Amino acid sequence: MEVGLNHFLFVSVCLFSLGIFGIVTRKNAVMVLMGIELILNSANINFVAFAKYGNFGYQGQIVALFVIILAAAEAAIALAIVLNIYKTFSTVNVDEIDTMKD
Amino acid sequence: MNTNSLNYLVNSLYLIKPELAISITLVLLVLVDLIFIKNKKFLPYVSLAGLVVAGYFIIEQFSTNTFAFATNNSAGMLIVDPFGNFFKLLIVFASIALVFFSLSSKEIKESFERHGEYYTLIFGMILGMMIMVSAADLIVIYVALELVSLSSYVLAGITRQSLRNSEASLKYVIYGGISSGIMLFGISIMYGITGSTNLYEINSLIQAPQIQSLTFVLAGILIFVGIGYKISAAPFHFWTPDVYEGAPLPITAYLSIASKAAGFALLIRFIKITFMQSVDAEGFWHLLGIIDWKTFIIIISILTMTLGNFAALWQSNMKRLLAYSSIAHAGYLLLGLAVMSNEGITAILIYFIVYALMNLGAFYVVMLIANKIGSEELDDYKGLGYSSPFLGASLGIFLVSLTGLPPTAGFIGKLYIFIALVDAKMIAVAVIALLNTVVSLYYYIKVLKHLYLDKSQKEVPAFSASLGSLVMVVALVAPVLIFGVYFTPLVDLAKHSITLLGF
Image (cartoon, rainbow over all chains, first blue to last red; front, side):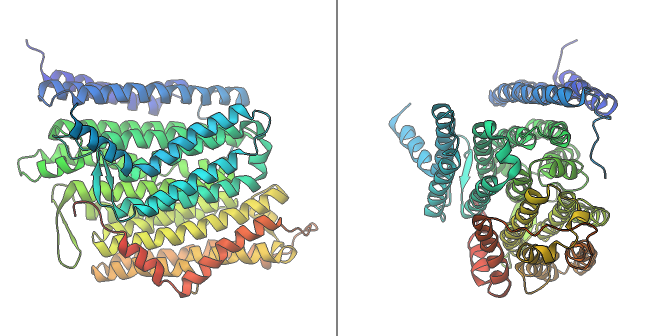
């Protein structure tokens, strides 16, 4: 069987859904951030797969590089914020961090 | 590389002079912070100088209408046109106000050792927003959006003095990360269908009828999620109240104006360029039928303003109340876009000038009061109207303007939105928006009732702000009152600024 565009898209949709699932179900802030990373990487797979199988040139690959860098920057900032949260709240459970009322 | 393309590149650099000024100031701020490590009082003045220079460059090239950084086979990465320049000017104005806010904010003054990072991050955000309002490529849009978001995540929690400060930062980063991830997924699908990330190229490609419409609709809506989060439109507004309440007050004010303005400019550009078919003689847009943006935006805007206004009714914290009020204002602004005509865009631009003035003013007075009494709770505002008559009266004027009552500028903003709606024969929507305004009257007037009619249990200490802050309040009150009766310059500026490149 030849691996084609659809296989890549299937993997990317699986990753996207897993990312959303993780964000919705996990209570730990770090796990939520991992869900976000999954979403970003599913988009990366899309970009590279479309660029390869659609013969769109190298634009898709370049975009994926941009996204990898931005994802790293975002992860660094998000983890720093989570660390700060742990210092002030002594927990990283997103449900317990709720001091502001509606 | 041949000389021709080198020349072109240099010419493109001339077109982005405002952005370059901001970038250079950013580097300067880092250097000044490192050189004068003990003395941080130069930072605000360096920032102000950079902003003034950027503002001068924007005014200088206001009527330019061209691409920057185009290559042989693509339409260009950035657009320099009056529409973008209008929003850049608004962002620079809000940033200058932000520097003055920070100078008199107690919260910011107390986190003295972080001033270097504070001003640097603000300039990162300004740079991101300036690129956001002039981007013509989905990837530039994504990178600019992330630049704004990453800076503002940190700024929301910069003082680290209270629990709610850190909490605001965490909530912002989680909601922001999810929505920008979803937006990126949408961009990847749109790239897959069209083979391009340039808005103008996508526009010419989807004129052909054989595009897979269902997938394309999905991609368009996923991209809207990312932009909708930036402008805090329902149902992507959940972060707004918490972040606005937890962040330091100058940052809250800034997020509610500059960040929202950049988001709106991006949304208008995205929809108008990508889906435009033609503009008729009366200025109404005929979009491609691939996504029914008109219905979609009407639904989102009615949802946004109703939710914002009704949730604001129960609030007892002034920052939270203004957060919900800013959600409601995003709803009114979306109505201007829903009209899908040049008249609607004119109304949005007028509304934005007015909204910037009155919202900055309201937040500034709330900040001055918080500096003195250390609280933003409405219950602590009792009797303030008598103990500090000037601040009470100015807050009253800003709130009346936010409601949209004459003779304040807020009335003019709402009036033009309603005129655009009526001209497009969208009477039912106009009536809903009008009823929403009536609801909003209740919670704005509730604040006035606390200021003037309620007697405080404890003795209210009489206080007045410093001379500088009073001048600042006057500088914001005066235009709100003047534009309420003499609004011709506003309308002229807005009419001059609706030119988008290409259409």
